[in-house]
Image (cartoon, rainbow, N blue to C red; front, side, top):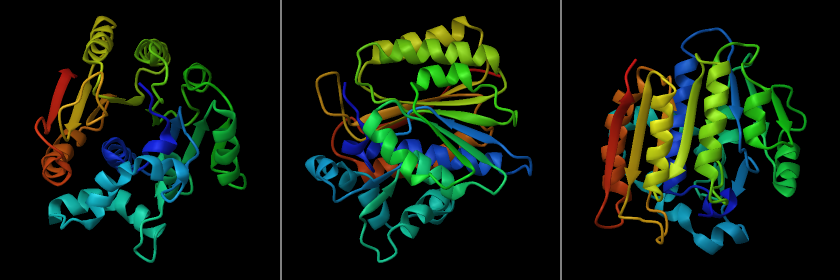
Length: 282
């Protein structure tokens, strides 16, 4: 699997992950107390949809492009507005050219007392990322492997917040690396929220990860899935999922309203569907 962010900005995977990211931030802001976001695989932070990379795939046209051009039902529009308002603010003339990655989206939604830590290992991507936030005292950018970052920066001094995990899946053992890093981090910070994104391709690896979380006696683990067609190990990505540890109690209900509509709007063929499963109870 190869999922470098720049080639896939705004695609169906980003639709799921950034919807969840925005809802997490909204939830944490229900309390006045500050919180921290650790984004372990930050990428470059903001994406030019006219760049060579994005034009090569054009995947955003089947993702955020369809969402913005759709007639969104009121109850869904209210839930999506934090995310979509940021996208629209970056494209004030209505012509979609710029797409916020998770760092840019988080920064736009943060309050003045919230903090964001971004780690990125790729040297060129880190240079662009650090330049984007160079003068921002609320954001810390660090040239570091995201799996090491989870061992170094948790728990945060704010004691509130979440870890957003969105690796590129460029190496075959990425699920095992993610599972190990999350288990170690969770043992240090059992009350933190962890949001893990992945393509729905290697179902055995996903199952192994979930079994490892159960074996570790984690509590409150939620799975979300969105597919716009049938995908497998040798096909392009047509579905993605997220596993959340200690998710907001509001999230499952919110996503039960959003995901069916996404299926209708983003459908690309047979195999379209969605799923919300409480893998481990509270």
